[in-house]
Image 1 (spheres, rainbow, N blue to C red):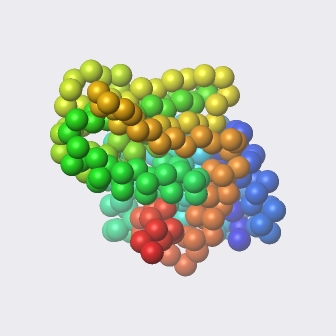
Image 2 (cartoon, helix red, strand yellow; image 1 turned 135 degrees about the vertical axis):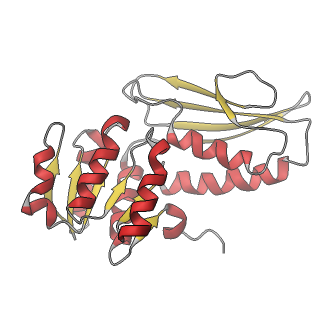
Length: 239
């Protein structure tokens, strides 16, 4: 495949290394203040663009890539208030967009485990539930997109919680505690606690390789497909 990179920070470089290792060609790299490259023949030759930038620039990046006719795979978080716009473009204009709050295979297994555990714990109101996430100090959004995904999945199953709150203390809100420390790639925990005991499940990323590999696999998955795609489309945990 011909792959374009939008964003060339640590994740972009990791994705480049893995993509080349899987036999793909990086035909265009677009970093900050290089919007003119979206109109280049090199960018337009890409089978997919993998985008890891900032919440502030993400939506404009998607618009420019769509205008160039290039499918987008994005792992940028913090822009989801505009998600409906992207879904509408996919539905009405035949564009291709693959979004994941986290591309790691391990995290997506963790998502499935979280949903299953929440379904069980809905029957045990003595257990309160909260979440924690820790990331490196360079991460701009809080809570993380992964933490929000985890929280929203819990809310679908736990009737006693209504909405999530960052560092909140309302008893009916699902509390998310967000920490920014050093160069931590990402740690997410779900904690159920009663007066008698506590249950905790945790995903602890060792590095960025799992995220980068998942993004490249997602780009491969988009080939020949149209519409709005997610990790649930690519991975099958139903069997």
